Figure (cartoon, helix red, strand yellow):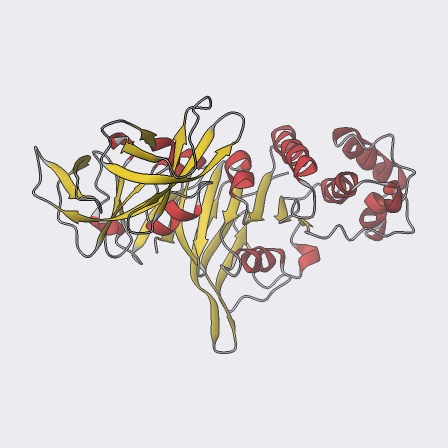
Length: 387
């Protein structure tokens, strides 16, 4: 069983403090949605309101078109996996997974069937008689996930479930979650501040900032065509490089800008009226060493990452940019280098933080703070906000 989810004008206030001002989003049945954003952006609060663990100050929450805003958690048909495993230390793995089913009076045979199926799915079938203290961190998290799976819920809710794991276990558990979603075809809502988790797990990422939606879309759309400077800077590791620029006379219908060093670059962005202080943005893979490059600086650090190398280059005004360089390239600290941006990968940001991309100018309706149409996996439109 799986279900669609709809947030319709949901708000959350603690006294006079507004955490979520007005949040609307449609999640299609079977979709894997990741709520991504920095600490304090409201993503966990949204998840807890969906689960019924937090009250709603305004608006409605619908599950399979049923209004569940006032329903207690136990009657919503949802299963939640928390950052902390919250396992009973005196119980075996089997009993931890079976505990909730026994509490609702499910027959013993059905309890065993569900636990056995979930245990095989999560490779816990040989660990059912162990206690949590005898398990690794990754195994404990799988038990917590298994406890949710056996409930056969309408949707799964994950509140930063991988943050307590070390890097290797986090990678493995992330893969297991992706496989689990494929096997179950279930609706999943996953909260994280880790963009790698978001990029690798999501059907659709919803980037939050200050309780509002900055952008929602497929992972690579978010990465390649960010709608705002906030999204461009938050998604991607290392972050996108930003440089203040001065607009020059357009050339052949394209926007031309002067870089901090004085060189003029003709972008691939169609000429349009743009207000305020301008910045260009380019990701490290779009900034390369070039003997005649318009950007000059000194190498401050060279990161050897195996599959690629990154040069941290200090510019004359104190700005540091990160450029991808050939893995076999040797650069000395303090060496002067020249860099050339890939014009197809240059983004332009206006004074309000709105993004413009190569050959595409965002519609004026996507002004900051105005409604943006989001389309769920089921094809229905959902109102959101670009901030």
